[in-house]
Image (cartoon, rainbow, N blue to C red; front, top):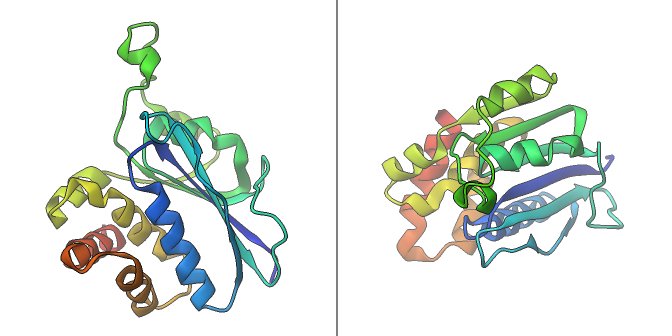
Length: 190
């Protein structure tokens, strides 16, 4: 199998590290060679963060170059646009529609771009966008946006739901497991 590439992008503190660990655990359990990069960016300060997950028969590097991402999983609409050049021609962006103002917008130096999802679609990119924050709240925790996104991403994989649940069970504390399972189901069925 040729190597597949997933980028997880967002803003610090949104749970991208758990999402990448969960994907890595899931893909390893399916017999793939997996490389997961460290989180890059200002993860503790609300800045842009990116993690790479690569899997296949044999993966030599965790790094994804422009035009190589099969999937971009984005916690925030502007982050999806920021990393659009990394998407393969037939790749898919799974994104939260939530908008988190970056520092230049907060300070008034810039304005948040309008209709950003429509603009990305106009480039020909395949966009699967949903309000993950609303679904996470419905699941019982605003912090479950990452698991809602993974539930949505699961549509594009031929991996049984039970395997996704096993990965969740291995990485999520028991006290939060039911909320996360509900978040996954809400994302999957949205």
